[in-house]
Length: 171
Image (cartoon, rainbow, N blue to C red; front, side):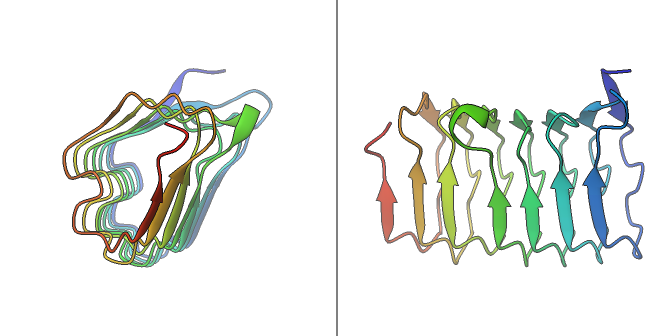
């Protein structure tokens, strides 16, 4: 079965949840992880979205997961508004790169208020919305993969960051 949606708010506020790993269980996959599905799961440390399991991360899906340190977004195509905002300890967001890259859109405030330090964005990104990485006070460097398809970067997408080095040569 494909085309399923993990319901909005399904696991919101569960304090004991520490790790999420989506798996392809005999062809079953979620196309969308619903809005606020894991919102405020304050003990959540790691999210691993395995290839072939989810394509869209809903609005506020993981916002307020204050203990989250890493997220693997290998097959995710769309990250909606404030999906990871307020994940104050998030230091790593890994995207698939090269021929495996799929991410096309990063929504408004999607990674705001995280502790990302470096960021390498895949060539498939078409749009980065307003304030997508705003107030990532420790974000020092970002770059785009060679042959980038980027068409637009919204206002203040990297506003209030400590960016001292960036590479737009491939855009």
